[in-house]
Image (cartoon, rainbow, N blue to C red; front, side, top):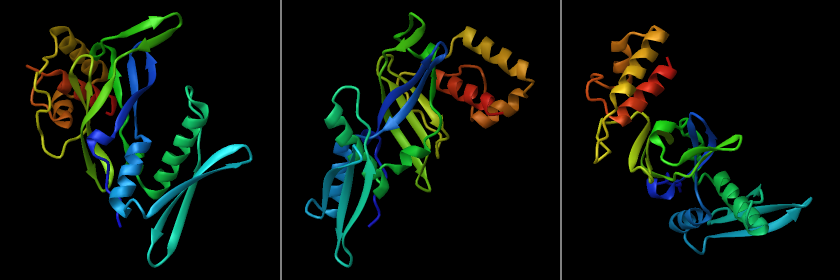
Length: 229
């Protein structure tokens, strides 16, 4: 039985890095998602889990019953969380064991996701470090050969959508289109000139027709294109 790929509503997002320029994002899944997919794929009575301490580390083994093989087990170790030490370690070990079975393994193929400060709402410097209190949600995901090819992530504080990767079919995912400001366009033109890149080539690779009326989603896509050239 092939384990299906995760839906957008099953993928969670958290901030992994934060600096003056913006934040890096990371995708993850929770234990409930793993349990639901195990139930859906194999049946609630066809899988089980067990935990054991090995050299002081908590491991989780997930077993699946196959008619021709009997019980097959896959195991991994957990890392304790900052809030609930034992519970967090047990949950992490279970999720890692499920990765071994292939549940959510496609999350490791996600493109680099960086959201620039201009697209954040609560982003500020506290002492010597930068903090961001925005939250994010995956609203669309596309796959090619079981690898993530396209993501749309919504900033729940600004209600803006950010694209990562390339969609299979060009589409508008932002119901309230935000147009890039004149200062953003001038900064973009300056960046292209400094790098000595042909404007037409940049726009073609970013799948944008013109700088006139560029949306914030298209603006971010152009910036990522320039960085990759």
